[in-house]
Image (cartoon, rainbow, N blue to C red):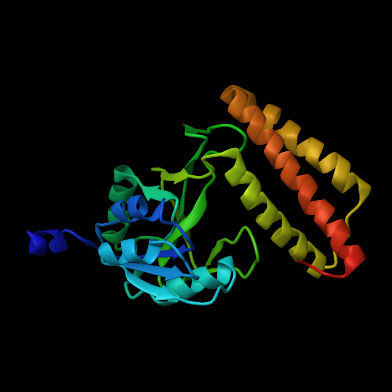
Length: 260
C-alpha cells in the first residue's frame, strides 16, 4: 500500500513556515499529503509543530526568524521539485484545487505562476464580503521563477514570467476569536508602521481620523460587509482599529526615533 500511495503523489514541493502552529499544522499537512515533498521551515516553536510535521514525512528545519518574506524565501529555496506551492499553516488545499494544480503540472503550456483565490473564515464562517473574497494571491509557481518581495508585512510573490489564474479556492481558517485578531493586529500594525517609518512617511491627522472611518465604511458598505451580519460589522470595526493603530504607532515612532 505504501508504494501505491507514493505512486499517486504529484511532483510538486509545498513550502510552509511555522511558529507554534500545533493547532493548525496537522490539517494543513493532511490537505497536501499528495505532494511528493513538503518543506517546513520553523522559527523556534515550543509546541509539537515540528513533531507533527515529522510524522507527516515533511522535511523540517529550524532557523532564526528572517521576517515573513525572508523566511518564506528560505523555505522556497529548499524545495527541490520544478513546481512550488506556498501555504500558511492555517490554510487547506481543497480537493478541487488539488485537481486544478495537477492539471497545471501536466500541462506543457502552463504559465510560470498562478493566482489562487482564498476562501477565508472569521469566527467559523466563510466571509464573502468586506473585500475578503476572492482575495487572489500567487501561491503556485515554477521553482526559480517566483520569490517573495522583501517586505516586512503583507509579503507577496513576484513571478518572473507569465501569470495565470486558478478558480478553485484555498481554504483559509484565519481568526477563530477576536482576541486572536487583536494579538495579530498588534504585531502587524507595528511592522507596517515601521515599514512606513523607514520609508520616510509621516503620520497626519487625516491618517488617524479619516483612514479608520474610510476603512470601516468601505468594508461594511461598499464591499458588502453588511451582508455578513454582525461578523461583517465586527470585522469592519477591527480593520478600522488596525488602520488607526498603524498610524498611531507611526506617529509615536516619529517622536521617539524607534521603529518597533
